[in-house]
Length: 158
Image (cartoon, rainbow, N blue to C red; front, top):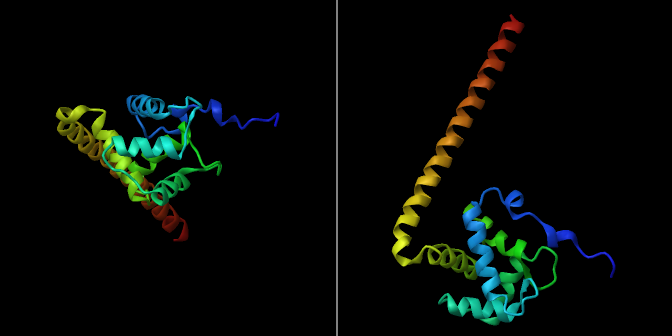
């Protein structure tokens, strides 16, 4: 067909603002490493090989489930965008398949090397604490605004 899907030129940095640039670069490198066919997609065999290399071999059925979970265009392949989606979902805690959970965990720790894993987890925990703080501050601000609105409304009523 003449109209190729435009997902080829997606910008991972704008599309996944929750992932750091470093993480995106690492995930992209992992993706390229296992995309042995160099077609810009991970197929079932490539995913199978990757999972074996990560020490979590998967059954055929499990691999299909993993692909299906992030395969937004139903082509039975994982594009880079869909691959990043795995890690995005991992940060949100919404991954369903055990295989994808393993994948997200292994690639995370793997990229820091085992020695860096401890620092990596500490950094991650600090980042989570920071995010939580930001969330709490935003919530507090919103609560204040609501309170002000309520008081203004009450004054009007009197």
